[in-house]
Image (cartoon, rainbow, N blue to C red):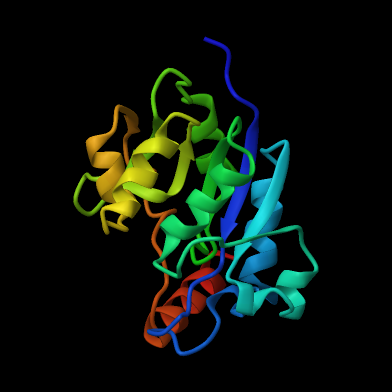
Length: 197
């Protein structure tokens, strides 16, 4: 089976309520996380876009990059994923969240090397519960229908879609998919990265 072209989607349309600041603009090692994640994503994809809500369209950091504006209600990451599939239905999507400061090239290279285009998605298992991690996942075109059906039924959790789908599940990639949601986690991550640098 021939593989669909691989596009990239950087999810940064969240409201960052728990962080109380825009997570895309948090600086790690002197650089906004959005730009760091963008560089990673574009190293592995044919085309890439930043997923934004309409109200974020003109925010300067996001406005400097190619955008896909959510065409679904602001119901979390699934709105961005569905909007991307609608815009380019024949593409597979490497989707990553913008709040993964430990994500690295090795992790993305591993994911892409393990891609199975005959499956609905290729994903890593969480190191915490063994369930699929939806926000660093390769979503193939056929899963769009399943995502849309669940959305229309009022279920907005992309992880539950992956649990029900026929996916290729990889072992957890260490701590590289740990995300940052609160000011305390941000401070801890900054200290951790200072030690590593």
